Length: 169
Image (tube, rainbow, N blue to C red; front, top):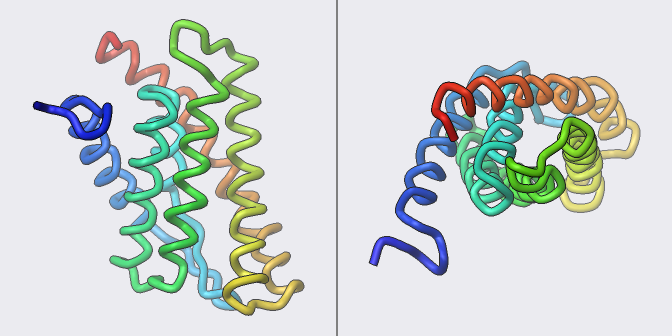
């Protein structure tokens, strides 16, 4: 008792809390009218969660929190793609950075950079292939909104270090 397919009660609580925090931080948006997408700060929490709690918790909390934020904010057409993109982002960052005891500065930076590529490429593919947005418009969003969002997500690195010290985890 206390687990769902290998997740402990602690993991489920963290997923719920960090998923909710992802929704809240994603709610501060700057819309990008041509695609119907938006810039937000939610990726900071996706990065923080992945670095603190690993790939599974980071992937689930990032995917669920970001996907639910899309629904809540009225961007439901993006929700399935966001769920996958942010879930993959959280998982990959947590996986590549490795366990906290083995997460070197270089591993964390590489993980964050690859997470940024996942955001940029993931939304570009979703918009062009599945949502019918033209290549020039999707590319404009990638170079304005998505690259900026990927860069800003790096705030999750020092945030995760501060939280780790504060919580002694």
